[in-house]
Length: 398
Image (cartoon, rainbow, N blue to C red):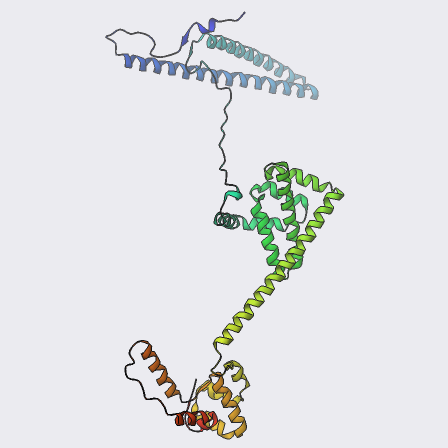
């Protein structure tokens, strides 16, 4: 039969009884509560003292028994008799503690229950939901790029360390210790790193990183096929690949070789694109510095005699006149013509500066008075005058 006697006396609440009107009810309830808490503390202290005393008595008995056995083994009868006497005293002491423990248990059983002792906590469990990121299909290009940038900034060093492992056991252990690496961002970073290494012509290192990249991609594909978290597929994947199933390994190697070829092609395309852009930039710079005759001043300068180069570098017109005068007339005319067509030499520079100033003033609305136009005869004379003839007189180099 079920014993319901334990429910007879229960202190369910401190304020359930009716009190006399002349008694301050809140004060009475506070006193009751304080008295109950003090009784519980005393009972707790008594239980702790009892448990400690029982444990110490048991320990002493066990140690004395071990010592007695050692003495008997050694044949020391005198000490053994003394220890036996001590052991009997300790056993009697232990019995007394046991009796006290039984009495305390009966006392605790007769103690009325209250709101603090009526029930006990069976188990406790705390669950904190992790933050779930939006799937990549729902993210914008900017959000995807920002997520990748944040991942690389935080994990670049350990991703590179993973890319250098050659043994599968080392890779497995490293991923288990760094679960945050089991994601698409790691695979994407390894792909970019492979292309950069190929561009730098570090092919041996590229092939090593490519192997780790395919390992990560296969692991992620296994997780997708099983519809599980990739972090939960680390052990199954490495267990499968270590078994070295011929068909599975053949597919793995084929994918690895195809990936290496794609990386080499991508590196070649990037190199050709960079080379083409550099050539276009050089061509733009060359077109920008072409002179009025369509010649490149740098090329013309390199073709000049050393004496003329020194004159242009020092911007010494009198020295240039002397050098030209000392040259053959045909050579001097040839070089000076090329200097004019490339813009190294500007014939009648003062007139050119004046015309440029007048043109600028006219564009700004400040050119009310125009200069008189030159006569056709004067223009023909200017056209007929060669740079060689002019350099004998006066001119300005730029």
